[in-house]
Length: 243
Ligand SMILES: Nc1ncnc2c1ncn2[C@@H]1O[C@H](COP(=O)(O)OP(=O)(O)O)[C@@H](O)[C@H]1O
Ligand SMILES: [Mg+2]
Image 1 (cartoon, rainbow, N blue to C red):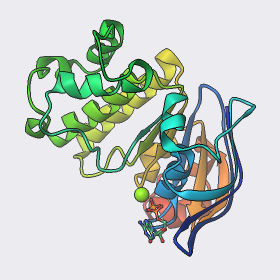
Image 2 (cartoon, rainbow, N blue to C red):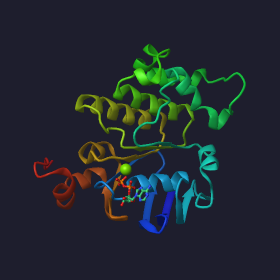
Image 3 (cartoon, rainbow, N blue to C red):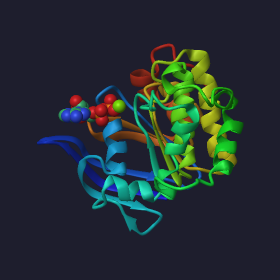
C-alpha cells in the first residue's frame, strides 16, 4: 500500500537518506529499527512531506507523494505521530482529540465525531476518565495514548509512529505495544513503526527494516530478524534470547 523506491532526503546539503527501498503491506505492522541518527525519523518525515526528498513514494498503487506538500499528504489520511508526542498542553484531552478530525472535517461547525471518539475511549479507557483534564497534567504514558488517539481521530489509512516508547517505563511500554497491535488487528490499519526498542518492535512486526547511515542494511519478517545474528549483535545486545 506504500512503495518507496530510491528515496533520498536532505537537510540542506547533508544527505540523510541515501537511496532507500521500502514496501509497506496493507494491514501489516512494518517497523524500522536502527541506531540513533540512522535516518528513521527522516524517513517518516519524507513520507509526510516535511523534508526535501527525491525518488518515489507511491501510495495505494498510483498516488505519487514525492511532489506533494504536508497538508495534501495529511488529507490523504497518512497520519504521523512525531517523536516526543507534541500534544497540546493547554487543551483538554477531548479538545486534543478533536484537533485530529481537522484533516477530514475542517476547523468549523458541529463535528460529528462521536463514533471516532467512542472507539478511542474504548481503546484507551484512561483517556475517557481524563477527558476534561488539560494535556500537560497527563503522565508520559497517557500523553502517548493521547497522541495516538488524536491520530486515530483522523481516520488514518496509514499510521506512522515515531518512537512511541521513548521515555516510558517498561510496564507502560508493554501495555502500549499491546494497544498498537490491537489498532492494527482490530481495524486493520497499516502501521509504520519506528523504534529504538528493537526487541519489542520486532516482536509485534510482520516485516522489519534495519536502517544504518541512511541505507537499508537488513530486511525481513520481524521473527526472522529477531534471530538474525547481525541484528542480535548490533541491536538486541549480547544477552539476546535465541528463540
Ligand atoms: N534538522 C536537522 N538538520 C540537519 N541534520 C539533521 C536534522 N535532523 C536530523 N539530521 C541528521 O540526519 C541524520 C538522520 O537523523 P534522524 O532521521 O533523526 O535519525 P533517527 O531518527 O534514526 O535517530 C542524522 O545524521 C542527523 O544528524
Ligand atoms: Mg528519530
